[in-house]
Image (cartoon, rainbow, N blue to C red; front, side, top):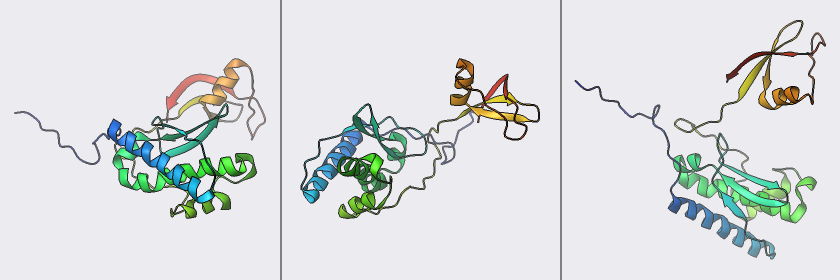
Length: 188
């Protein structure tokens, strides 16, 4: 007798959004940008949109080497498509607009300028979404085991790599001795 596997919410794996949905999100992003351009009577350049974000965030505005990009999480969009289209798209466009109008160094990420742009778009200036991540691939942080004179420490990949390159030494906050790598690592 064959054993049937029941697909439930707890073991269902969410697939990323389709190309058609990606195009819909991209179109919504550019339309929101056009709308805010009309509101502020300023022409803003179209922004690159990527669907490569993973983890808990549904969107992210990023500037890297003078290149501006909005990244979306294709898994969270797949699970909460309509909600993210209404909330995440204006949220990230508002970050881009406040960067262009005021500069990132001159304002708080979710400060009054950002909130004003959100309100001008008719969007709720809420900072984060609270999503059920069941079925969505979540990035796991790798930790490395270190030891000092008094206890054991868990060190992130970034700090571990700095130690391995010889760029940094870390001291225990309690005994003030250097922490040393013990040769084990695990995914948390």
